[in-house]
Length: 96
Image 1 (cartoon, rainbow, N blue to C red):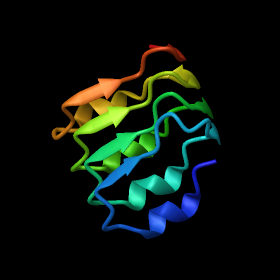
Image 2: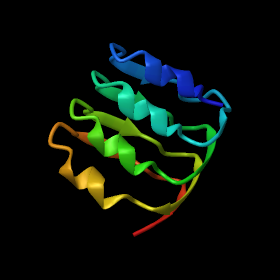
Image 3: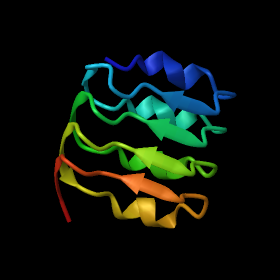
Image 4: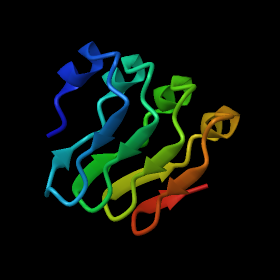
């Protein structure tokens, strides 16, 4: 699992934990990591939906969530993220 306590580290700039066989959901508490510019969670066993709260990460440039077991729709709020440059959602069960 990704610890929700990571949200208590607002100065964190990069969270790179791909290819680690992590399971569980993406914690909504990640929205409190205000300086995050890279979130790389690909190639794990993460399930559930993509939290819409990630759209509040105004400095996020890279959002890599591919090769997981994510379901639901891609949150339209992600379209408001002006700093976002790279998105990877491949190999999930997402719709929309």
